[in-house]
Length: 465
Ligand code: FAD
Ligand code: NAI
Image (cartoon, rainbow, N blue to C red; front, side, top):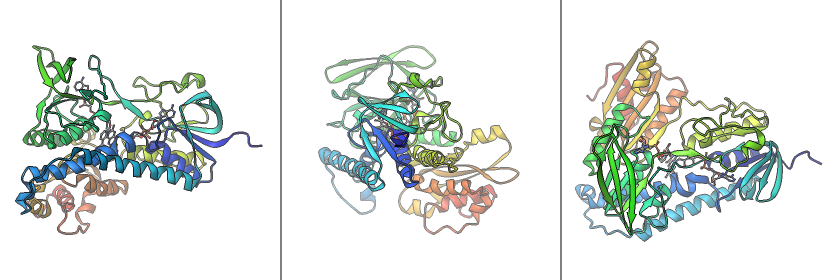
């Protein structure tokens, strides 16, 4: 009889966990995956990446029809909003994709254990009373919304909501206040602004989008203001009261000073996410979390406890689905005795607003702090395709090492920045120089030519500016 029920048991079926499970099974390991939600796919497929993109995509069409963009191109329509249908197509996308993971589990013979997991010991996990043993356990429990003291979320009431609640609003708010000018605040704030809400973003720091290149952050503020969002930077929320369908927020300058109030019929709390480790029984295996509540691992995704591994949002690094997926693959390969690697220096990040904002590698500020650099920047206004499509905003910026010319970072704002950044990530993964990009033939007319021209700019020789 086998010593353990499974070679590997994965806790959590988000992009980290489900991908790890499939790869482990592909490598011939007997695999189970525990998930407490009704459906597979984790935050990303159920209440994150996918439903938010469904709402962003649909609201973009509505906005283009409403704000005159379509009329500019000779398509004259008078749109009306069918919010119920917009939600229905969001739910349909989620249903199809989460169902797709269930199909892939069956196809790859991954056992889906439904329930909540907690460690009994390093090789035994309790799932709602059933004890399952495994030679290896991968923790992929993800993250959840960070609460804000004094601002209580109630997604049912739909007055003060988190990202999950903001995806499901039954009516378009008149006045929406978004607390936190990060990725969620700007994406979901954009959805409801496009559908008619007056949106105010209250951000503690003096710029939006922490972690991105300063040029992107400053340009982002201009773009969102122009779109009609009210931005209150360097401002903190000190309290919130709810009276029926209205909320009153008290705010004051982040540095202190006179307070004021803001009225809203919807408040979105989006000040970050924190790792899910509560109730996992980590104390039973002697596994401690760091100051930020994350589980630390080595380069191979091993924790300090033998046989226990961790990946995704629950470990340090950007909380992104593709980072979790790549870690899932690498971790499963390491469990199987292979050499799984993730290059954490090359993880692209994308904000799916209009236009999109994306980056990979070092920001100009980070690169400068490390040594001499060269920078090439090309405006989308001078890119023929963007100009033809009436998309003048944005730029591409390439940062390279002054002595070796190796690309250190690429940042862009463009309608399809999320797609464009993949090329930059590939170039960096191959150790490309800006000259390599500049001398690579790019199809015309495409937005990607702006990346080539920005790279030519590093050489001091762009053609179209
Ligand atoms: P999760 O996806 O959080 O999955 C963890 C799973 O573990 C959950 O399903 C949970 O139910 C389960 N679980 C937890 N504890 C237990 C337990 N004890 N027992 C059993 N099961 C358990 N990222 C992007 O890259 N692109 C985007 O466009 C994007 N958009 C987003 C939009 C929103 C609104 C949000 C909230 C997030 C978004 N993200 C996006 C972030 C992305 O969703 C996460 O980075 C990603 O889901 C992390 O994957 P994970 O596998 O680590 O964890
Ligand atoms: P975030 O970390 O991106 O932004 C939070 C913002 O809130 C920051 O700008 C921060 O300065 C601000 N803030 C913190 N406390 C505050 C306070 N008390 N008052 C006012 N502002 C305050 O976090 P967000 O937007 O909640 O997203 C969580 C995670 O989900 C992110 O790490 C992101 O990686 C991921 N995500 C990724 C997406 C994508 O890849 N397109 C989309 C949505 C989420």
